[in-house]
Amino acid sequence: MRISRLFSLTLFVWIIGISTAYAQTPVQKHGDLRVSGKHIVDKNGAVTSLAGPSFFWSNTGWGQDRFYTRGAVNTFAKDWKAGIVRVAVGAQNDGSILKDRRGNLKRAQTVIEAAIDNGLYVIVDWHSHQAERDVKEAQAFFTHIAKRYGHTPNIIYEIYNEPLDTTDWNRVIKPYAEVMIKTIRQIDPDNLIIVGTQSWATEVDKAADNPIRGQKNILYALHFYAATHKEFVREKAEYAIKKGLPLIISEWGSVTYSGDGFVDIDSSIEWMRFAKKHGLTHLNWAVSDKDETASMLKPGASSHGGWREQDLTISGRLAREIIRNW
Ligand code: MG
Image 1 (cartoon, rainbow, N blue to C red):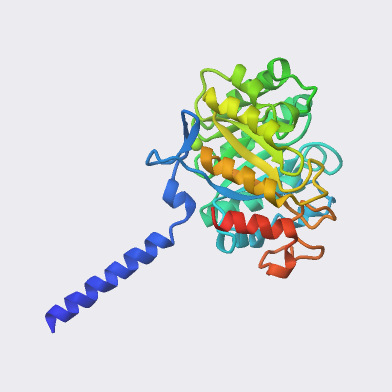
Image 2 (spheres, rainbow, N blue to C red):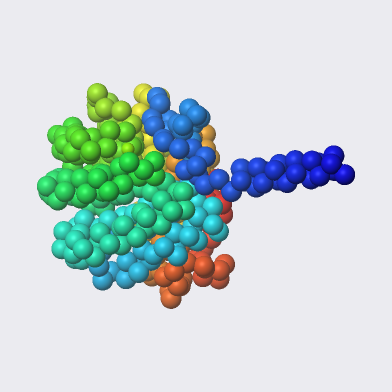
């Protein structure tokens, strides 16, 4: 009798232990991330490559601001099994944070806090193509975010989404990045910071030739749109990786660079092979039901997640498959 009770107790503890291990969130599993050499590594020093979706521009009144909900994040955590999500805080054009601070901040914070509660990593991205025009506003924004969330392991700062092709890495982007890094580091000494690179984050080779010095936990953005960017962008990325530059694919699409057009499944798979080979983290554009092929959701999909197969577009189904199986 006693032996059998002891046995059941042991079995019970063992089962609870196993289920707890499986129930671990990405942040429970990996903890504080840092950059070691050209990789993101976790609390145990293991190379860590995460996958997830990127929200669309948060701009008020653009229509895709409606997806900045706790329900959407819950669905990405539970059904898509994402490790990370990206908040694209619109920082230019109508309805941006420069024009509606309160609305954009509220949406960003809803997603950030839902990500923290789900144990996901969350990239907070200053979504602008001309961030150097609004340095003071960007500083105020990241100061706020760092004070509020910089103590958590979840937060990753992305200080400049996609600089234009005419915005020079050496003269404009790197100096901007150094100012923003200094601002964030006064508050948060350690969380990852992603630096944008020239030409919509495709010319990582320029950053590799003149990287930021004397700072830790810095990553460089590599973006691609699979139907447009192929071997010629991978060659730049290979060059940068060979020089030891730590990259992150903080945004990619399976379509053309415009966010519309052909869903290039073959090229997307080729890129995912590349990401796997180099241990890169990646986030798919975008959580949106706008009438363009990069949108994951069909028009009228619920703002609060819980989507079914038939709510997803072709690119949405591809993204979910990739993320779930990463
Ligand atoms: Mg910190």
